Length: 206
Image (tube, rainbow, N blue to C red; front, side):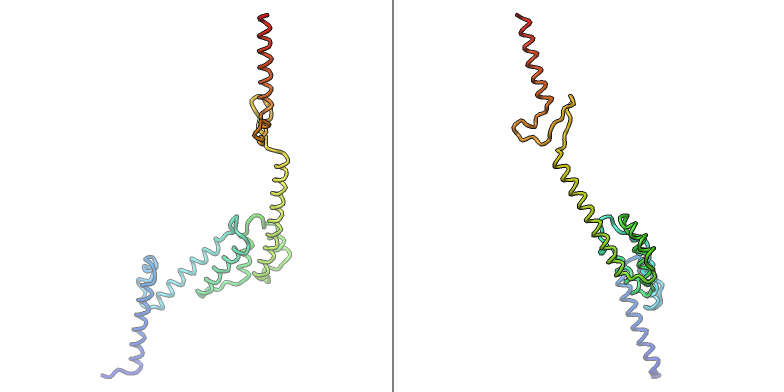
């Protein structure tokens, strides 16, 4: 019996689907292969994997936190990357949700500016780019203030050399010049006392 046109198309579709399913199985690792082991078609296998990857990315999105030494731009870039990956898998993730995520996962140095943003701006209408600009401006101010504080501390330290204390309680400069000027007052005092002691001892024999 001659195969009809519709039957020929159906047969070709089955062949392409089987080939695609085989390619998917070869491309995934052991755990994902177990997930699609019962899939009857490439579409079914893809849907299983898509849902799993979307759930994993969603968990990563929810648990993402800004690192202590991480800059604002780098952190927001990480948020945008995960957001785009979730969207690519067909899940809706609107910009206000990403903005809200950034605000609640920033480091402690942004606490007060986050409160100000939430009070003064409507989060639902705040663009992620605008938020990034505001936070970067705040970060520059904070880093500048910290830099000035460190510079001041170093200046004070250079004017007042660190000292140690001997058992006798006299200060010992840690900035000795190599010619004896860094010797402790206690050392010179004990030396002087030793000289006087020998003098008295000699008088006792007169």
